[in-house]
Image (spheres, rainbow, N blue to C red):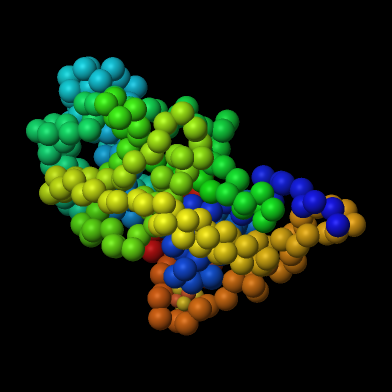
Length: 299
Ligand code: SF4
């Protein structure tokens, strides 16, 4: 038997969000992660005020990594936020009206005011995530070469703890809801960061809820990482078998035909797909191409 050849273009790229999509429903995963409009060749996305708010606040905070630790505190986050916000033309930001946009923008301002009154980890040493980018690909590593599965992710902030010469991962939260207790987001980030470098040990992770400035530590023991890895490979293999087949004689992964049929409705109870189905039926309003190069729609 040929050893299975790694092929990044036919690999299954697993991330926290794609894993969540698939666990909710295979068809939702298909619509969000695979489907491309035949005319434009682009993936589709649903514009939302929450996403716009999240991106603007994250961009302001993540840009601080480019400054020396002692200079971060001197930055005018609110002025930077104005600039970030202005990049979102209201036509593709998903707001219903000016009043709603004002309300969301104000929420973001309050979050940044919270940060400015307590910079916490932002004024400590950090490692820029950009050091782990692979060209224009998100930081990633082969979590299973045999199964052709890659783990990728975008860690908001990596703190370098001088005393212990180790790293902490921090995730900024701009939503109202707390991350679920059994969320795999931070275990996935620790797994990723541990495999992207071997210079430093990676410690626990933190969620920083910016709305109420609460900073929540999560323990990430080895047993949890082991279970997370097993789950990613198991789910990734299931997805791969629906998308690609190994051709023994050619020694290559090949596309399965009629992939869509393999990603079916799981139970009809979780129905986020309805919004995507509206796009497919031509019932949504096309807004334009978003910053990720996807066709953006308003439902
Ligand atoms: S109706 Fe619900 S369960 Fe069915 S495909 Fe849509 S999201 Fe999935």
